[in-house]
Length: 601
Image (cartoon, rainbow, N blue to C red):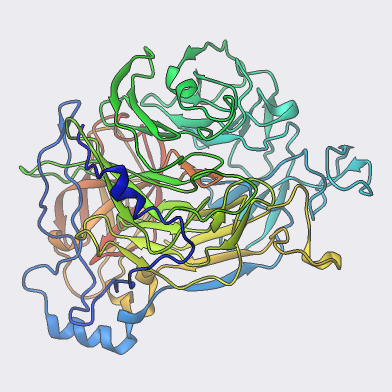
């Protein structure tokens, strides 16, 4: 592997220990001189091989040859989208449950839940069911009859309450190959729990409180190539276990992972919780904990490769940086592909004083031998934010704070401004600040990419129990029950003429590895050219505590475009795309269509 390394002395100039950091000006997504939506273009990447499969990293930002500049410039000028930085709207004034964990389901419902061990929520469980209250305020009722999970209709904002018996506080999760939500771990009676929720009209969680081998609190769950899940780490857990994707009854086994003990601070308790895990195209895993990382064979427990330390501070909970595997491009030619892991930093030493979060980030090219971390600076400091892969291949950083760390009452100065990161622009021009929200989204907040390419944003509770703004008391950061939707710049109305519409009824929604399948689009007027589009396939993640588990975006190979019929090649194996449900988008001039759900197996 290769690392782009700067000395610690140089790094200390960029880490941002002072709150008064100098911020680079935002770079417009579409410049004043070139207002063309950025389409796919020529690829400029070196060879990279994993598991004998070449991959090419996507390159965006140039106009295709022959594009009518005048027509596009006029359209851009009409809507002024050179200045478009996105838009926000409130989708629900009160969802009843503050979102600590979220998963988008294949039935277009977002499921979220918090803890059953921190008192009452703001919505009663329906049908009514009560149990003795855990935690909360002393004057709360002894019986807790409130819901701690909901199913949220992303189209109508309608809410159905969910019953969660075992506490999922700081748990992990992901979608199974059958489209079920599989949730693991938690606290108290949920330490060893496995929960399964099917995406059906009246389904509720089915649970086994003793399914796991060890307690899993702040662990990471990730799908493997066969659809099984690895559950890795957690507080005082220096190991992992592999569980089946759709069963509550199994015989657990344990594999020790020395990296987790080596990367523990504070007596083995902190700074490596919710480790970052990504499935690589050879079936191995990239595992990052605190500031250390390795390539792991999950089936043997062997450390395949030791990666360099990322200098500058801790990146995992509670300092809580962000991480994502950048898009994998399967639409390859003779140039091959590079694949990079991207990890954002947070806080140096999380004490009760609210130290500034870091504004630096590290980027690691996993194709290169002797890889080095390449350091960049974000426009602002951010701790416990979310990092989402957009259908276009860009990265959105959203939510979080500028000072402090993850924990109750341990952060200040909310970071209200989303940032767009364009990984294939030249260094120094990759970050763009977007329109800020007016609602702080700090500890225990979440976000999710929706089929219409909007971002659902919910949650935020820095308190040990619900402190509601309508309670009559004043709080610095009350428990947030409002739900927002953020529209990135690519949803500007002026770009609608580039937005394609998938004909879901005439498109293949189930396919096998390596096979061709078809996606049909409605032709508005002009014939669609192969060079103007890309087809992306997105795995909706389970997001909690600033980490989106199981998230990946693939750019699929297009073999033919005939009028409105696009012939696409499915990923060759589960190493590239674990079996299950994905959102499929057709991106035209960097403007995504509405996505449709597809299943690969």
